[in-house]
Length: 558
Image (cartoon, rainbow, N blue to C red; front, side, top):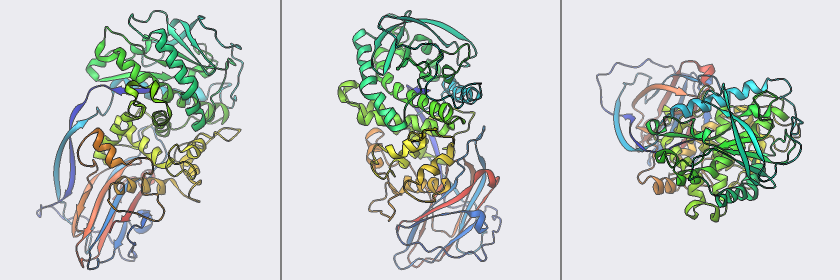
């Protein structure tokens, strides 16, 4: 499900760093006896399990030129849980013993931001993904294959009328019958339009253009990157219903500042009495009577990205459940792949199909803005989104950014990342894909790094989020850079100002920060040793270590 915030808010972000405050109580001493010094060459990095080192690692004394390391204390749990992996942490750095002082300095920043949670849109999304797991357990669904025989056996024809069942509310526990007409039928898609949509909606020319966009471009983009969809009804096309029943799912859009743009509902790929019996996704329509939410310009701008986003969700359910016989992909990775599909649309759709001729802006700019918001304060958000949540917009930015970084590792085409995304969907496996979440990511990572684990990939991604903007930085593996985006430049174009990530900074003599680690995310700190500065000992303690899978990600910058 795609959601969209159509207004900006001003938010204050608190960034902690080391500073004064000598009257704070001493921190608990952590014993680093027997822990070896970690000497990294400039550009080298390491992912360290603190459980194996008593929570500690040590940096050597600096030479005449000084030294700088970036450290990220993160939760490297790649497993989705209903409420998300989270636990308290304390990160310390000192030259001698672990008895530093708590020295917080709050630096408020105000910047244009996006609403963190999108009310009924978020609840609706969480319901859709939760129901996928329920639908996977219905008789005759898991392992059913890509083709079925649940009804229709011929493609629809232009002008044909059909009644669809659409969700009445965001709980989707009841349905409304929607009489609609096939206004476009192509080789890959058929667009039905609700017969009772508000006046002033899509023209036939606009519907034809949208149909051609799907037939000629979006279908190939998604199926090339992720694999084929199912064809449970045997009609050979994907059906799209454009209806104001989607608009009705955002009744408070003016107050909440968010709109449900469309959705895929996995019930349609089951034999449930309320199923539409085939491959369907749903999109909003213009409504001039509610211009703040559903203007024609807004609807036209968002409907193409909605198509490519929702089609990935459909393919994912097909490949994991109908073919793989397993559970749907975990929410965080499923959403990351759908947002990545939007970017692929922005890169590959011809400009003639896009508003103002700028497809990358139309399809991908929302992901860039959401990623910016995440990097302002990554410790405040999950990357591995809880299963009971649709994810805040910054969290959606995080999972897009992670999938984008992972796709950049593709051995052949790192811009489109097809080798990685096809592996993540089991597109080249006849039996589909049974693994999900962090296990799936680690399996895909074998394409470029034998034996890699999810914690290693998550740690390297966090390091890349900082080294991306460090001038002149390079490292042998190439994994601490994005290949497809110059994030420093693109952030500055969309949201002028400095790079959004502001790590804490310490010379390593007395630093301490406490807070909450959230699944897939972490706290960043720069340890900047002066010329001939003393060695630094760093310690991390966490609660719920088994669930958090805590890690240090460390890179030497100079």
